[in-house]
Image 1 (tube, rainbow, N blue to C red):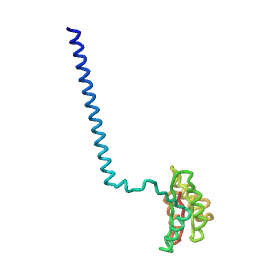
Image 2 (cartoon, rainbow, N blue to C red; image 1 turned 45 degrees about the horizontal axis):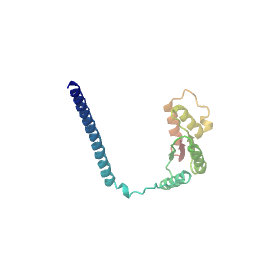
Image 3 (cartoon, helix red, strand yellow; image 1 turned 90 degrees about the vertical axis):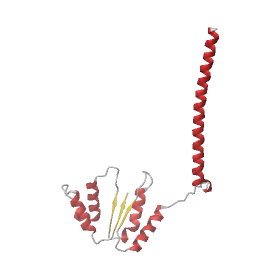
Length: 169
């Protein structure tokens, strides 16, 4: 008798464990079903089925697009200056694009400069570089003691009443 009672208790415990496990599985399945319903509702709300399944790829040629924008800006105001930021991942041709645009448009401006900015830029060096590009004779031998404020003031003074174009990348 004690042996069969032990077997009965073991079977009962196993059945109880299976019931608990089945209940947990049932709860997980219910959660999944609820999430599926929510996804379906969002799909209907945002009309996902109406959107084309194939992606629309539109190629934009920056070499042609940027000059159009420059010319649009130019027509708005002949005295307006242009600063064109060119950003993106390395190896995309930003430097080549900026140099090419600068060469194409520099004749249309009183002055121009080209600035390359890294992830950890040396601001003082950038401003010195700008001044040298603007007037190498006057600023070719800038004293190292010049502070950033003085450099900025000199750039502003030089660019005042001038139409300029700069490429920042």
